[in-house]
Image (cartoon, rainbow, N blue to C red; front, side):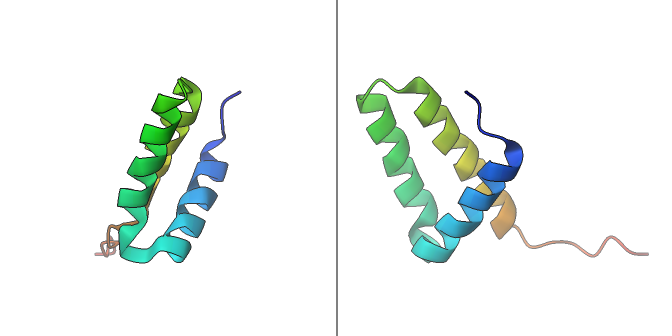
Length: 65
């Protein structure tokens, strides 16, 4: 069962709140835990969360002209 993009975004936001600057490193640890358990879907979910964390941490640009 695939996790929705909205749920990934919410999880990433909460993960940043809980782990601050260590968020991506700790999420990578979760990927490795899932891989050790042979949980490919879980690992993929954590990889999606890592991407979302990166997106949330990227400063928005002012697109107005």
